[in-house]
Length: 243
Ligand code: PGA
Image (cartoon, rainbow, N blue to C red; front, side):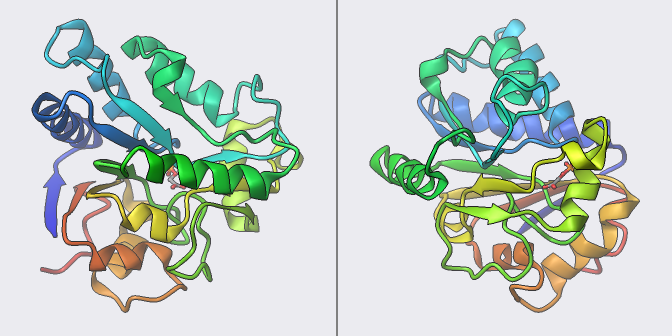
């Protein structure tokens, strides 16, 4: 594991963006796995700036997002498709054909999950998967208790996750109860992982994930077994990690 602790979340975003830029410059048609949430926003902004300044060309990459809510119109401002369009696809000039995200409006979420997983396999797998970490250790929407062999599947969101995400909605009632997420096995098959964490509220769960036992109770702990994992944290999130 390569652990990078930055002084600020802004610096962490720059370092994360530079890692993505380096990988894409080495392989312009890289397959990128991408997260939503508050954590990657700085990285996305830095990537958009790099595209404008022609320090990276994203025109040949393909992206697969980790997850999407079910039961929310994809046009809803907080659907993950809308989030990605606003924060990454549009600012970076990505065409719709380059980008993939589970269809949260699919009539059969399990069939959609299987098709999504198959699409990742068919393209040859993900080169670089970027991840955030939830306060309960979730990666994507793999909540505590998810087995490590889980592939892309539909899930019921925990109350804790819904409460954490309620800040983006008018009320907790509006937060969807279900989602489709890449599974832990799908995530671990990526050839390289980049885990991002910012803020003191992530310090305990990040330390437990990286230094504690590998257990379904903390899904991010399964990342410990990956041969090519980089963790980029700001000082507050990295504070509890003893080397
Ligand atoms: P956050 O979410 O980036 O908004 O903290 C991370 C996650 O839940 O995976």
